[in-house]
Length: 383
Ligand SMILES: *Cc1c(COP(=O)(O)O)cnc(C)c1O
Image (cartoon, rainbow, N blue to C red):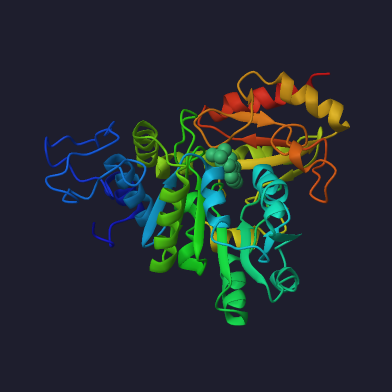
């Protein structure tokens, strides 16, 4: 596929030529585990579907193009993708991670990999020199999210990657790009070594499939990740790959509308007397709105806020909306609302990563903006 094509064109076509046997325009769901060989070891590139499957291969080729990487590996979930990156390390290695990160990632680091001899440090990445002062001689991986979940903090991916590589060329920088998607920012082009996604979120986009992916540009990294994907086996099925591929086709138009709706909801909340504070990269009050303009195409569809009245009021708000569904997850066509401290980020309770118990996180969907604002307004005025 021509690299000069726009993101919108690649999202629809990359990795997905018409099916050579039938001309089918949509990539077929190759629901098969194995492949007939013409002779021993003589086959068309597929011998067993844990190792490779044509529907998965199409998704991986598409994701590699969208993230400007040499290769992508698809996984059964975002956590399985993150797990594969951690398996690149060995006991004794140290990981420096941004301190506001997805609760499941924190749980995997602390409750699984800490037992296997990896050490983790968490720090704010808003100020790159202060963040990188935590790098040790045994640090092998830097783990970033931008925007973070649920505080919507940003970090300068380019500055952190350049500084880290100048200090130690062996140091790998991995960005969880789930919130931004490659449509808003492409970490590999900014200098990162690895990108992970929960394709469950914006890439799938319709709350109907769980999946994950890792993308890298370095050939050696791609090969090691492909080895781990096959060796550990947390692969997605062909139906799931098909659903993610289909979702990706509309990613650009969805992300534009998610952001347009989120801009208006952020402004509405910021002006509401029942709201103490709003976190959205597009608001002038966001401390890194300049970095958002520099690093992201738009400000995305996620925001969080703290209502007046503490956790009790916050609970009334999230239980009071009619259009916004009270649910975990994010990034799909329908609007969702939740309380991170008790839901998505419950695993950080009692740790230094504890979330304000009154914080409400919103995944702004694609419904009519007037309906969404009226729904939030009614929930905020209830008591
Ligand atoms: C959801 C999510 C994950 C985990 O992905 P699953 O598909 O649920 O396993 C990781 N990182 C971020 C930022 C997420 O939102």
